Image (cartoon, rainbow, N blue to C red):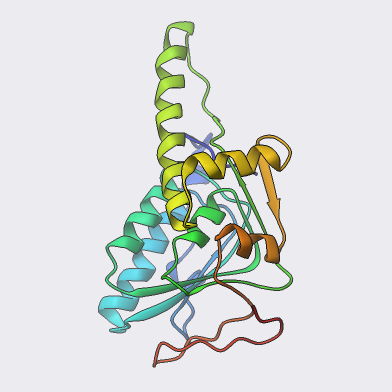
Length: 213
């Protein structure tokens, strides 16, 4: 678990890709971000958005999230694809949205960010997973990752309608470096707009079942 700055595969087998069809629903305009957010997931996320926009001519889609998070640059690729998709993209934490997955959840279309009444979210600052090879690299890597973290917090805070300073204070108040959120707390933070189960339709309307808020 954790939003990692850099993560490199140990073996060629780790580069194997999940087929796009496994994350893009054949029946609805839903993309499933379930599991590790790595470069493979990011690539197929981009391909799924392209298929929806250019193949199916869709103007709206639902991103269903159940993930521990993953790599910073995989998240960056996915956020870039969302911003350039020219589609109305709703986000939904159907299970858990931790770390990078929470940032992805926050990036949904305004008023179209959902969390299940059974779900949860977690946010924290950047975690390094690629130690420097020599002591001389430590200072440069530390500065680089500090810059990444500031950018990440600024983006996440903007999505939540607050400032990075206030967001970081809330994370510290939550017990240190990590802030765990139940659905009601996620909504109060501004991470989501609604607590409930969304159903996307051709008319880009949303129906909520279960707990509403």
